[in-house]
Amino acid sequence: MATAGKVIKCRAAVIWEAGQMPSLEEVEVAPPRAHEIRVKIVATGICRTDDNVRAGVFPNIDYPVIAGHEAAGIVESVGPKVTCVTPGDKVIPLCLAQCGECTSCLNPKTNFCLKIHFFQSQNLMPDKTSRFTCKGKQVYHFLWTSTFSEYTVMPEASIAKIDNAAPLEKVCLFGCGFSTGYGAAINSAKVEPGSTCAIFGLGGVGLSIIMGCKTAGASRIIGIDINKEKFAKAKELGATECISPNDFNKPIEKVLVEMTGLGVDYSFEAIGHIDTQVAALTSSRLDSGTCVLVGEPPSGLELSFAPELILCGRKLIGSLLGGWKSKEALPKLISDYLNKKCNPDALISHTLPFEKITEGFELLHAGKSIRCILMF
Ligand code: APR
Ligand code: ZN
Ligand code: ZN
Image (cartoon, rainbow, N blue to C red; front, side, top):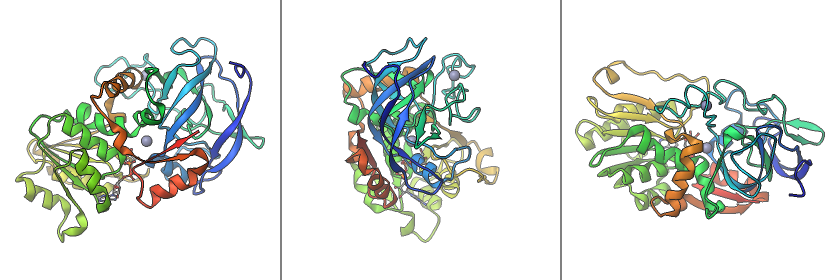
Protein backbone atom coordinates (compact mmCIF):
# COMPACT_ATOMS: atom_id res chain seq x y z
CA MET A 1 0.00 0.00 0.00
CA ALA A 2 1.08 3.58 -0.63
CA THR A 3 1.12 4.29 3.09
CA ALA A 4 3.46 1.40 4.02
CA GLY A 5 6.60 2.57 5.80
CA LYS A 6 5.21 6.08 6.30
CA VAL A 7 3.66 7.89 9.25
CA ILE A 8 -0.14 7.99 8.87
CA LYS A 9 -2.19 10.94 10.12
CA CYS A 10 -5.69 9.86 11.13
CA ARG A 11 -8.61 10.29 13.52
CA ALA A 12 -8.41 8.96 17.07
CA ALA A 13 -10.00 9.52 20.46
CA VAL A 14 -7.41 10.48 23.05
CA ILE A 15 -8.09 10.35 26.80
CA TRP A 16 -5.75 13.09 28.00
CA GLU A 17 -6.30 12.53 31.72
CA ALA A 18 -8.09 10.04 33.96
CA GLY A 19 -11.68 11.14 34.44
CA GLN A 20 -11.95 12.98 31.11
CA MET A 21 -14.06 11.95 28.13
CA PRO A 22 -12.14 10.83 25.02
CA SER A 23 -11.32 13.80 22.80
CA LEU A 24 -11.36 13.58 18.99
CA GLU A 25 -7.91 14.40 17.64
CA GLU A 26 -5.68 13.95 14.64
CA VAL A 27 -2.86 11.60 15.62
CA GLU A 28 0.28 10.38 13.89
CA VAL A 29 0.72 6.61 13.75
CA ALA A 30 4.27 5.43 13.07
CA PRO A 31 4.94 2.41 10.84
CA PRO A 32 5.14 -1.02 12.46
CA ARG A 33 8.57 -2.26 13.58
CA ALA A 34 9.79 -5.88 13.68
CA HIS A 35 7.05 -8.35 14.68
CA GLU A 36 4.43 -5.56 14.55
CA ILE A 37 1.39 -4.98 12.35
CA ARG A 38 -0.42 -1.76 11.46
CA VAL A 39 -4.17 -2.17 11.09
CA LYS A 40 -6.90 0.05 9.67
CA ILE A 41 -9.72 -0.30 12.19
CA VAL A 42 -13.14 -0.53 10.53
CA ALA A 43 -15.44 -1.06 13.53
CA THR A 44 -14.91 -0.89 17.29
CA GLY A 45 -17.27 -1.52 20.19
CA ILE A 46 -17.32 0.39 23.45
CA CYS A 47 -16.85 -1.98 26.39
CA ARG A 48 -17.21 -1.23 30.10
CA THR A 49 -13.46 -1.76 30.43
CA ASP A 50 -12.85 1.21 28.10
CA ASP A 51 -15.03 3.29 30.37
CA ASN A 52 -12.99 2.13 33.35
CA VAL A 53 -9.86 3.39 31.55
CA ARG A 54 -11.62 6.70 30.94
CA ALA A 55 -12.72 6.91 34.59
CA GLY A 56 -9.23 6.06 35.83
CA VAL A 57 -10.19 3.12 38.06
CA PHE A 58 -7.59 0.72 36.66
CA PRO A 59 -3.98 0.89 37.84
CA ASN A 60 -1.02 0.95 35.49
CA ILE A 61 -2.66 2.99 32.75
CA ASP A 62 -0.55 5.87 31.49
CA TYR A 63 -2.21 9.01 30.09
CA PRO A 64 -2.69 10.38 27.49
CA VAL A 65 -3.95 7.06 26.15
CA ILE A 66 -5.96 5.69 23.25
CA ALA A 67 -8.36 3.07 24.66
CA GLY A 68 -10.48 0.56 22.72
CA HIS A 69 -10.01 -3.22 22.55
CA GLU A 70 -13.10 -4.74 20.86
CA ALA A 71 -12.64 -4.25 17.14
CA ALA A 72 -12.15 -5.58 13.66
CA GLY A 73 -10.04 -4.21 10.84
CA ILE A 74 -7.80 -4.77 7.83
CA VAL A 75 -4.02 -5.08 7.81
CA GLU A 76 -2.49 -1.95 6.25
CA SER A 77 1.17 -2.95 6.50
CA VAL A 78 3.46 -5.29 8.40
CA GLY A 79 6.88 -4.79 9.96
CA PRO A 80 9.91 -7.02 9.35
CA LYS A 81 9.66 -10.69 10.39
CA VAL A 82 5.85 -10.79 10.47
CA THR A 83 4.57 -14.04 8.96
CA CYS A 84 1.01 -14.48 10.29
CA VAL A 85 -0.76 -11.87 8.12
CA THR A 86 -0.28 -9.84 4.94
CA PRO A 87 -1.74 -6.46 3.94
CA GLY A 88 -5.44 -6.71 3.10
CA ASP A 89 -6.18 -9.53 5.58
CA LYS A 90 -9.17 -9.10 7.86
CA VAL A 91 -8.13 -9.30 11.51
CA ILE A 92 -9.31 -9.05 15.12
CA PRO A 93 -7.06 -7.30 17.66
CA LEU A 94 -6.54 -9.51 20.72
CA CYS A 95 -6.94 -7.87 24.12
CA LEU A 96 -5.44 -11.06 25.56
CA ALA A 97 -2.39 -12.00 23.51
CA GLN A 98 -1.36 -15.51 22.51
CA CYS A 99 2.40 -15.51 21.96
CA GLY A 100 2.44 -19.27 21.40
CA GLU A 101 5.76 -19.64 23.23
CA CYS A 102 5.29 -18.98 26.96
CA THR A 103 4.53 -21.76 29.46
CA SER A 104 0.85 -20.74 29.57
CA CYS A 105 0.51 -20.75 25.78
CA LEU A 106 2.09 -24.21 25.74
CA ASN A 107 -0.33 -25.44 28.45
CA PRO A 108 -3.68 -26.57 27.01
CA LYS A 109 -5.41 -25.85 30.36
CA THR A 110 -5.07 -22.05 30.23
CA ASN A 111 -5.34 -19.06 27.90
CA PHE A 112 -3.44 -16.76 30.24
CA CYS A 113 -0.52 -15.82 27.96
CA LEU A 114 2.30 -14.42 30.08
CA LYS A 115 2.84 -11.51 27.67
CA ILE A 116 -0.01 -9.49 29.14
CA HIS A 117 -0.40 -6.55 31.42
CA PHE A 118 -0.33 -8.63 34.62
CA PHE A 119 3.35 -9.14 33.89
CA GLN A 120 4.44 -6.19 31.76
CA SER A 121 2.93 -2.87 30.80
CA GLN A 122 1.04 -2.96 27.52
CA ASN A 123 1.02 0.85 27.45
CA LEU A 124 3.99 0.76 25.08
CA MET A 125 4.96 -1.70 22.38
CA PRO A 126 7.19 -4.58 23.58
CA ASP A 127 10.28 -2.51 22.64
CA LYS A 128 9.07 0.14 25.18
CA THR A 129 8.24 2.84 22.64
CA SER A 130 4.90 4.23 21.44
CA ARG A 131 3.70 4.38 17.83
CA PHE A 132 1.27 7.27 18.60
CA THR A 133 1.86 11.00 18.85
CA CYS A 134 -0.61 13.86 19.09
CA LYS A 135 0.14 17.58 19.22
CA GLY A 136 3.83 16.73 19.63
CA LYS A 137 3.21 14.50 22.67
CA GLN A 138 3.69 10.77 22.99
CA VAL A 139 0.36 8.98 23.46
CA TYR A 140 0.24 5.62 25.23
CA HIS A 141 -1.18 2.36 23.94
CA PHE A 142 -3.79 0.34 25.84
CA LEU A 143 -3.60 -3.50 25.97
CA TRP A 144 -1.60 -3.29 22.70
CA THR A 145 -4.91 -2.76 20.89
CA SER A 146 -5.90 0.98 21.10
CA THR A 147 -8.74 0.54 18.66
CA PHE A 148 -10.21 4.04 19.17
CA SER A 149 -7.83 5.08 16.39
CA GLU A 150 -8.42 4.70 12.67
CA TYR A 151 -4.96 3.12 12.41
CA THR A 152 -3.24 1.28 15.25
CA VAL A 153 -0.13 -0.85 15.68
CA MET A 154 -0.05 -4.21 17.43
CA PRO A 155 2.54 -6.90 18.14
CA GLU A 156 1.87 -10.06 16.15
CA ALA A 157 0.98 -11.96 19.35
CA SER A 158 -2.03 -9.64 19.63
CA ILE A 159 -3.66 -10.20 16.27
CA ALA A 160 -5.78 -12.97 14.76
CA LYS A 161 -6.42 -13.41 11.05
CA ILE A 162 -10.07 -14.14 10.31
CA ASP A 163 -12.14 -15.32 7.35
CA ASN A 164 -12.28 -12.66 4.63
CA ALA A 165 -16.05 -13.22 4.39
CA ALA A 166 -16.59 -11.95 7.97
CA PRO A 167 -18.62 -8.71 8.27
CA LEU A 168 -16.31 -6.47 10.31
CA GLU A 169 -19.13 -4.30 11.68
CA LYS A 170 -20.50 -7.42 13.40
CA VAL A 171 -17.51 -9.60 14.25
CA CYS A 172 -15.79 -6.82 16.19
CA LEU A 173 -17.78 -8.18 19.17
CA PHE A 174 -15.66 -11.32 19.11
CA GLY A 175 -12.70 -9.20 20.24
CA CYS A 176 -14.11 -8.98 23.77
CA GLY A 177 -17.76 -8.98 24.88
CA PHE A 178 -19.20 -11.97 23.07
CA SER A 179 -16.16 -14.23 23.39
CA THR A 180 -15.76 -13.33 27.08
CA GLY A 181 -19.31 -14.27 28.03
CA TYR A 182 -19.94 -17.17 25.66
CA GLY A 183 -16.61 -18.81 26.56
CA ALA A 184 -17.17 -18.30 30.32
CA ALA A 185 -20.16 -20.66 30.02
CA ILE A 186 -18.76 -23.10 27.43
CA ASN A 187 -15.05 -23.30 28.34
CA SER A 188 -14.62 -22.06 31.91
CA ALA A 189 -17.78 -23.37 33.60
CA LYS A 190 -18.33 -26.21 31.12
CA VAL A 191 -22.09 -25.88 31.67
CA GLU A 192 -23.83 -29.25 31.37
CA PRO A 193 -27.14 -30.06 29.67
CA GLY A 194 -30.12 -29.82 32.01
CA SER A 195 -28.35 -27.59 34.51
CA THR A 196 -29.55 -24.42 36.24
CA CYS A 197 -27.59 -21.18 35.74
CA ALA A 198 -27.73 -17.67 37.22
CA ILE A 199 -26.17 -14.68 35.47
CA PHE A 200 -25.52 -11.49 37.46
CA GLY A 201 -25.45 -8.49 35.11
CA LEU A 202 -27.22 -8.42 31.74
CA GLY A 203 -24.86 -6.19 29.77
CA GLY A 204 -23.12 -7.42 26.64
CA VAL A 205 -21.03 -9.87 28.64
CA GLY A 206 -23.92 -11.28 30.72
CA LEU A 207 -26.12 -11.70 27.63
CA SER A 208 -23.28 -13.60 25.94
CA ILE A 209 -23.07 -15.88 28.99
CA ILE A 210 -26.79 -16.55 28.55
CA MET A 211 -26.18 -17.53 24.92
CA GLY A 212 -23.37 -19.87 26.03
CA CYS A 213 -25.57 -21.48 28.73
CA LYS A 214 -28.34 -22.01 26.19
CA THR A 215 -25.97 -23.52 23.63
CA ALA A 216 -24.63 -25.84 26.35
CA GLY A 217 -28.18 -27.08 26.99
CA ALA A 218 -28.94 -25.49 30.38
CA SER A 219 -32.63 -25.96 31.18
CA ARG A 220 -33.05 -23.03 33.58
CA ILE A 221 -31.27 -19.72 32.99
CA ILE A 222 -31.96 -16.96 35.51
CA GLY A 223 -30.90 -13.40 34.62
CA ILE A 224 -30.31 -10.86 37.41
CA ASP A 225 -30.10 -7.10 36.88
CA ILE A 226 -31.21 -3.94 38.67
CA ASN A 227 -32.17 -2.45 35.28
CA LYS A 228 -35.36 -4.20 34.16
CA GLU A 229 -35.00 -2.74 30.68
CA LYS A 230 -32.41 -5.48 30.15
CA PHE A 231 -34.89 -8.31 30.71
CA ALA A 232 -36.56 -8.43 27.28
CA LYS A 233 -33.30 -9.00 25.41
CA ALA A 234 -32.13 -11.52 28.02
CA LYS A 235 -35.30 -13.56 27.49
CA GLU A 236 -35.00 -13.29 23.71
CA LEU A 237 -31.49 -14.77 23.97
CA GLY A 238 -32.36 -17.65 26.28
CA ALA A 239 -33.05 -16.54 29.87
CA THR A 240 -36.00 -18.50 31.26
CA GLU A 241 -36.57 -15.99 34.11
CA CYS A 242 -35.26 -12.55 35.02
CA ILE A 243 -35.29 -10.94 38.47
CA SER A 244 -34.23 -7.64 39.99
CA PRO A 245 -32.60 -7.53 43.45
CA ASN A 246 -34.61 -4.35 44.07
CA ASP A 247 -37.88 -6.31 44.04
CA PHE A 248 -37.05 -8.32 47.16
CA ASN A 249 -36.55 -7.35 50.77
CA LYS A 250 -33.99 -10.11 51.29
CA PRO A 251 -30.59 -10.71 49.69
CA ILE A 252 -30.75 -11.94 46.10
CA GLU A 253 -28.64 -15.02 46.95
CA LYS A 254 -31.38 -16.13 49.39
CA VAL A 255 -33.98 -15.62 46.68
CA LEU A 256 -31.98 -17.76 44.24
CA VAL A 257 -31.43 -20.55 46.77
CA GLU A 258 -35.17 -20.58 47.53
CA MET A 259 -36.00 -20.65 43.83
CA THR A 260 -33.73 -23.64 43.19
CA GLY A 261 -33.64 -25.67 46.43
CA LEU A 262 -29.90 -25.77 47.12
CA GLY A 263 -28.67 -23.12 44.74
CA VAL A 264 -27.81 -23.03 41.04
CA ASP A 265 -25.34 -25.38 39.35
CA TYR A 266 -23.49 -22.49 37.73
CA SER A 267 -23.44 -18.82 38.67
CA PHE A 268 -21.66 -16.06 36.77
CA GLU A 269 -20.80 -12.51 37.83
CA ALA A 270 -20.63 -10.10 34.88
CA ILE A 271 -20.85 -6.77 36.67
CA GLY A 272 -17.49 -6.30 38.35
CA HIS A 273 -18.69 -5.54 41.90
CA ILE A 274 -17.32 -7.26 44.99
CA ASP A 275 -20.75 -7.61 46.64
CA THR A 276 -22.36 -9.26 43.62
CA GLN A 277 -19.34 -11.58 43.28
CA VAL A 278 -20.02 -12.87 46.82
CA ALA A 279 -23.76 -13.03 46.07
CA ALA A 280 -23.03 -15.09 42.93
CA LEU A 281 -20.82 -17.48 44.90
CA THR A 282 -23.45 -17.86 47.64
CA SER A 283 -26.17 -18.53 45.06
CA SER A 284 -24.40 -21.59 43.68
CA ARG A 285 -25.16 -25.07 45.05
CA LEU A 286 -23.27 -25.54 48.30
CA ASP A 287 -22.11 -29.09 47.49
CA SER A 288 -21.23 -28.89 43.81
CA GLY A 289 -21.91 -25.43 42.39
CA THR A 290 -19.42 -23.50 40.27
CA CYS A 291 -19.22 -19.72 40.41
CA VAL A 292 -17.38 -18.00 37.58
CA LEU A 293 -16.06 -14.45 38.07
CA VAL A 294 -16.06 -12.59 34.76
CA GLY A 295 -16.51 -8.90 35.66
CA GLU A 296 -13.42 -6.95 36.63
CA PRO A 297 -13.79 -4.80 39.79
CA PRO A 298 -11.77 -1.60 40.24
CA SER A 299 -8.29 -2.40 41.49
CA GLY A 300 -7.44 -2.39 45.18
CA LEU A 301 -10.63 -4.11 46.33
CA GLU A 302 -10.56 -7.45 48.13
CA LEU A 303 -13.04 -10.29 48.09
CA SER A 304 -13.95 -11.67 51.50
CA PHE A 305 -16.30 -14.51 52.39
CA ALA A 306 -16.63 -17.28 54.97
CA PRO A 307 -14.48 -20.33 54.06
CA GLU A 308 -17.48 -22.63 54.67
CA LEU A 309 -18.85 -21.28 51.42
CA ILE A 310 -16.33 -23.36 49.50
CA LEU A 311 -15.39 -26.03 52.05
CA CYS A 312 -18.62 -27.87 51.25
CA GLY A 313 -17.61 -28.32 47.63
CA ARG A 314 -18.45 -25.15 45.73
CA LYS A 315 -15.88 -24.00 43.23
CA LEU A 316 -14.90 -20.40 42.62
CA ILE A 317 -13.11 -19.80 39.34
CA GLY A 318 -12.21 -16.84 37.15
CA SER A 319 -12.37 -16.46 33.41
CA LEU A 320 -10.53 -14.07 31.09
CA LEU A 321 -11.67 -13.69 27.49
CA GLY A 322 -13.87 -16.72 27.96
CA GLY A 323 -10.92 -19.06 28.35
CA TRP A 324 -10.27 -18.96 24.60
CA LYS A 325 -6.68 -19.24 23.42
CA SER A 326 -7.26 -16.10 21.46
CA LYS A 327 -5.16 -16.26 18.29
CA GLU A 328 -6.14 -19.83 17.43
CA ALA A 329 -9.69 -19.94 18.85
CA LEU A 330 -11.29 -16.65 17.77
CA PRO A 331 -10.94 -17.32 14.00
CA LYS A 332 -12.70 -20.68 14.56
CA LEU A 333 -15.43 -19.02 16.62
CA ILE A 334 -15.95 -16.51 13.80
CA SER A 335 -16.22 -19.40 11.34
CA ASP A 336 -18.92 -20.83 13.64
CA TYR A 337 -20.68 -17.48 13.35
CA LEU A 338 -20.44 -17.56 9.55
CA ASN A 339 -21.87 -21.12 9.70
CA LYS A 340 -24.70 -19.83 11.95
CA LYS A 341 -23.66 -21.86 15.01
CA CYS A 342 -23.56 -18.74 17.22
CA ASN A 343 -24.85 -15.23 16.70
CA PRO A 344 -24.03 -12.16 18.78
CA ASP A 345 -25.71 -9.71 16.37
CA ALA A 346 -28.50 -9.06 18.91
CA LEU A 347 -25.96 -7.45 21.25
CA ILE A 348 -25.50 -4.51 18.88
CA SER A 349 -27.96 -1.93 20.17
CA HIS A 350 -26.43 1.12 18.47
CA THR A 351 -24.13 1.86 15.54
CA LEU A 352 -22.61 5.34 15.30
CA PRO A 353 -19.95 7.06 13.21
CA PHE A 354 -16.64 7.24 15.11
CA GLU A 355 -17.02 11.01 15.55
CA LYS A 356 -19.94 10.32 17.92
CA ILE A 357 -17.81 8.40 20.44
CA THR A 358 -18.92 10.73 23.26
CA GLU A 359 -22.54 9.84 22.54
CA GLY A 360 -21.52 6.19 22.66
CA PHE A 361 -20.04 6.59 26.15
CA GLU A 362 -23.12 8.54 27.27
CA LEU A 363 -25.39 5.71 26.10
CA LEU A 364 -23.31 3.29 28.18
CA HIS A 365 -23.47 5.56 31.24
CA ALA A 366 -27.24 5.87 30.90
CA GLY A 367 -27.65 2.08 30.68
CA LYS A 368 -29.24 2.54 27.24
CA SER A 369 -26.81 0.56 25.14
CA ILE A 370 -25.75 -3.06 25.18
CA ARG A 371 -23.03 -2.63 22.61
CA CYS A 372 -22.52 0.58 20.64
CA ILE A 373 -20.39 0.00 17.55
CA LEU A 374 -18.37 2.92 16.20
CA MET A 375 -17.65 2.87 12.48
CA PHE A 376 -14.64 4.62 10.91
N1 APR B 1 -26.99 -5.97 40.66
C1 APR B 1 -27.43 -6.45 39.47
N2 APR B 1 -27.09 -5.89 38.28
C2 APR B 1 -26.29 -4.82 38.30
C3 APR B 1 -25.80 -4.25 39.51
C4 APR B 1 -26.20 -4.89 40.73
N3 APR B 1 -25.78 -4.44 41.92
N4 APR B 1 -25.03 -3.18 39.20
C5 APR B 1 -25.03 -3.08 37.86
N5 APR B 1 -25.78 -4.06 37.31
C6 APR B 1 -26.04 -4.33 35.89
C7 APR B 1 -26.19 -3.09 35.03
O1 APR B 1 -27.53 -2.61 35.07
C8 APR B 1 -25.81 -3.61 33.63
O2 APR B 1 -26.94 -4.08 32.91
O3 APR B 1 -24.90 -4.99 35.34
C9 APR B 1 -24.87 -4.79 33.93
C10 APR B 1 -23.43 -4.55 33.50
O4 APR B 1 -23.41 -4.39 32.12
P1 APR B 1 -22.40 -3.40 31.35
O5 APR B 1 -22.10 -2.25 32.20
O6 APR B 1 -22.96 -3.22 29.99
O7 APR B 1 -21.03 -4.24 31.32
P2 APR B 1 -20.46 -5.34 30.30
O8 APR B 1 -19.82 -4.69 29.14
O9 APR B 1 -21.47 -6.41 30.08
O10 APR B 1 -19.26 -5.91 31.20
C11 APR B 1 -19.50 -6.49 32.46
O11 APR B 1 -17.43 -7.67 32.45
O12 APR B 1 -15.60 -7.54 31.02
C12 APR B 1 -16.14 -7.13 32.23
O13 APR B 1 -15.10 -5.00 32.67
C13 APR B 1 -16.29 -5.63 32.31
O14 APR B 1 -16.67 -5.68 34.62
C14 APR B 1 -17.32 -5.54 33.37
C15 APR B 1 -18.20 -6.75 33.16
ZN1 ZN C 1 2.10 -16.67 25.62
ZN1 ZN D 1 -13.94 -5.57 26.93
